[in-house]
Image 1 (cartoon, rainbow, N blue to C red):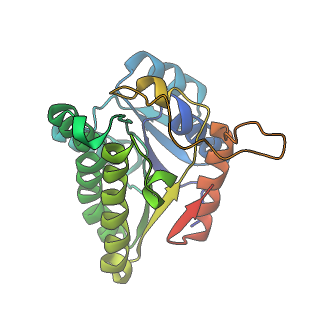
Image 2: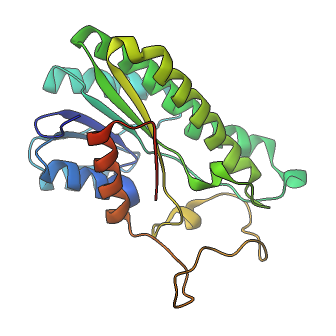
Length: 235
């Protein structure tokens, strides 16, 4: 799908991958709706990006998601692309997973994107098509000690996404999944639980330094994925 002049919702847009994606897609001519819980950060971003709209929302809250979709339609009249990027990490061995924390992570990483998908699908079907990109993770392609709870949310998101892709193909609605690897954001700092002191080491480049992507590189891959419409893309 082309990006120019498209109405695009980006969740988790106040920092990291979401912020980089919003800026890049705006530069490519999209009309951007930025959403996150950080109202002040969104207001600043709205001032920065032309033809943008800031809608504070907690993706754990169904009413906030409904308001996000409604305000997007009121402003732009359509929703061409939804980028489900908001999410949170969780550390800890399976034996010690806190069920209440896990439930909260599931609400954000799985139920939130699902509710957003359910909210925009009828809109996209009515307008003749659209695209949803769900930001997953490379951990959903592996299994790492200490990351089972977080990874399981992304496994679930993958299944929902790729099944919906098959279900909605006849409606002209494309569902794709992006799998970033370790990225230079506050993701680890904002994760719940205790980060393991031992475990798998990150991929390294020839110099031996950790291979960590910058958010702008992930945003570029996201834009490529939007244009190609392939089912999945990895960093």
